[in-house]
Length: 251
Image (cartoon, rainbow, N blue to C red; front, top):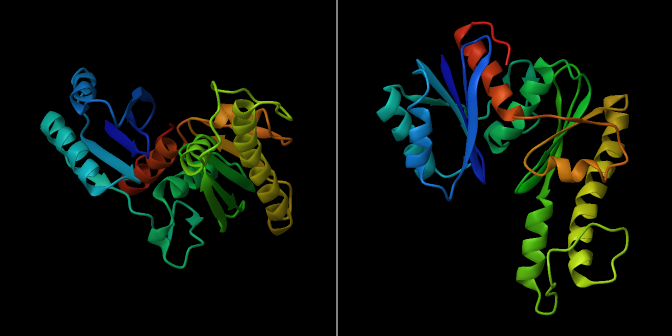
């Protein structure tokens, strides 16, 4: 039994799997008490190993690792982004500079037989990566996610003060709708442009795989055929953990 950990910017996501299937999974926001997460983990069968991927600070990694050790007596093996693993070849000259979440999303896509694809992570950050069918990473982009765009705009302006939350429209007649619609449409336009630019390099129209907490909000705005993915980082981590142990797994 293995505990998989995905420490993202906003939430910690986890899954418990036994090389064949997932027995449990969940998530906790960083502003929640880790003791509440521990209470949930106490009800689970004890894992014999724990594997983690993290884009957060060392302090939070240590806090999570301490909880795992206290409850289950095992250490967390952290994946740091490699140059190549599980058939994926990192495009970065300094491999560790690529976010491990982006790398694992590509590992999951390759393991799923996605072929030529563009992976889009829609969360605090908006990440885009092009992956060829043979496992070559062609590079990618990072931008603020739609919600972070809105926060940045409101924090950097004196007169942009919407009344209410706003809704998505093609052209707004009030500030609230204009801010929401502008930020979400900007994100959609970036995805569409990236796909258009990567298609000649891939040699075919790629599959577009969307993952992340805000993926569902973006998919309706895209003029592209898309595939929604859940827990791509955890699935990629399961594949990587399998490679370390040599034990087959079907996430």
